[in-house]
Length: 127
Image (cartoon, rainbow, N blue to C red; front, side, top):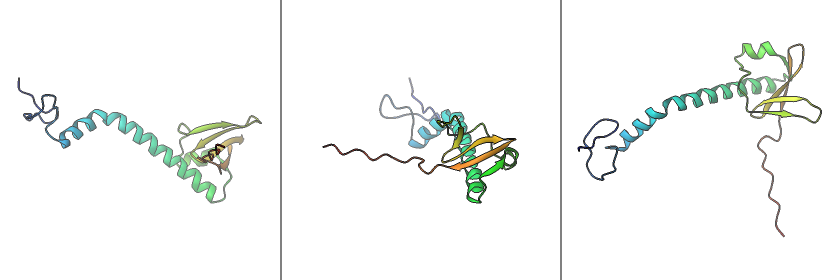
């Protein structure tokens, strides 16, 4: 039985368990298999970056309270966020990386930047 490359169909020579004739064919085959998953992740990541940029630009421009519609008009998508934080007082903050917001009434959102985002606690020295 003749063995052929899974990507291009060329005749395979060499090892009996060989599946591809070259690295390029192996990469093409695997990229084609993973295309749908990669596109989904790429699109989600792009929306998270867009949301972060919008919050960052507003916060850095001095806007610490903004109407929900203003975010939507700039392309913010409330479906995508990185994490939620609920404070001891019961306030619920939605974060997109280090920038967060919470509902503050009548369609307004209060913006905040976390100063300790991704801070790593120093390890305690063992005595």
